[in-house]
Image 1 (spheres, rainbow, N blue to C red):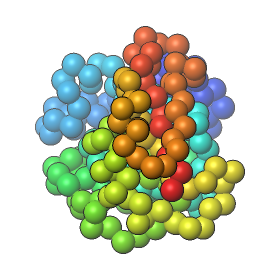
Image 2 (image 1 turned 120 degrees about the vertical axis):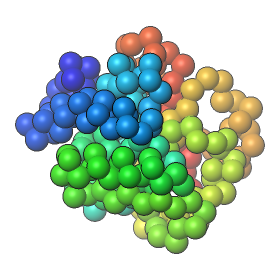
Image 3 (image 1 turned 90 degrees about the vertical axis):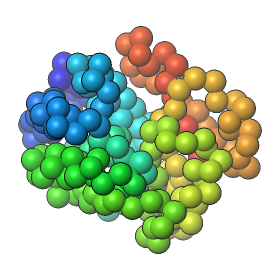
Image 4 (image 1 turned 60 degrees about the vertical axis):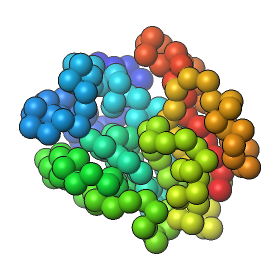
Amino acid sequence: MELINKYFPDLNADQRDKFGQMGELYEYWNARVNVISRQDIDTLYERHVLHSLGIAKVQEFGPGTAILDVGTGGGFPGVPLAVMFPETQFHLVDSIGKKIRVVQEIVNALKLDNVRAEQVRAEKLDDSYEFVVSRAVTRMAPFVGWVKKNISRNSFHDRRNGILYLKGGDLSEELSEIREKPQIYALSDFFEEEFFETKKVVYVPL
């Protein structure tokens, strides 16, 4: 929790309480259903919670925004972002049912009424969203193909609707495969921990 308070000092009491509960909840559920690698559970707040909140450093979501989290796994980045933006609606999807069951348990425990978790492939969705978030589920070109149809034409943020994607390493070759002009934000500009040295948020306007 010290990490979260360090970079987000203006959280209210309810947000602090929810972030504070995450460690114990994920430890409990991960022991039953492996949604996070065993070595990562000890660095949950750095490598999962704070990493997810890197998106919040790049883009704030206004009230009434609809966000799709594709391949959410154990609920990242969607669950931390839902705590950060309680007036934004989040739809967390994954094709693996046991992961969605864990996400639903955590959502219920945290009383996140702005989150819907569903076992479904992104390609099957018809709903519209202002932004799609994800954490390195596949290369960008096929990902854009999956979700382009789901991006709402109604844009009410300063930044155009699109994808906010957490990725690491050298992305130049991968991003050359898409027609859209992405913007890349280094998380090392926001977070000083070594883990974030190569981590980025990639914004793709759609």
